[in-house]
Length: 104
Image (cartoon, rainbow, N blue to C red; front, top):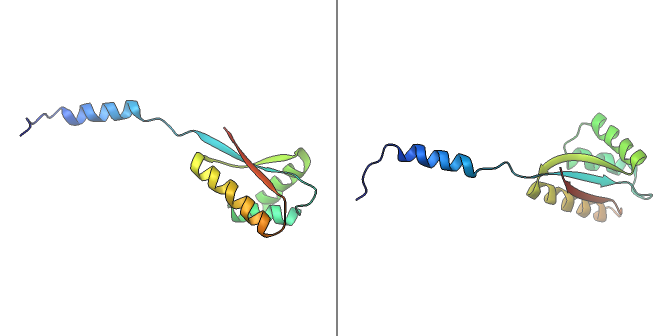
């Protein structure tokens, strides 16, 4: 049997705190094109990124004006999933909409 060490919990906790790091975050971007409708981009922003109609419209206009726009900042796994979902929905609806992610 092991010897009872009351300081073991504190030692373990301090080691865990040193090893934990915040996950890397990624910006998810939508890219402007000449074929995807503005209405579809607003719909994607509302459904995939949970933006309000007003915020979705503002982001869509920035994408249209600047060529790209940030939809949100997420951990790698969530960002990857959102990029894949946007591509899936765009292709399903016949649009070439591009979505990418970059480290924030």
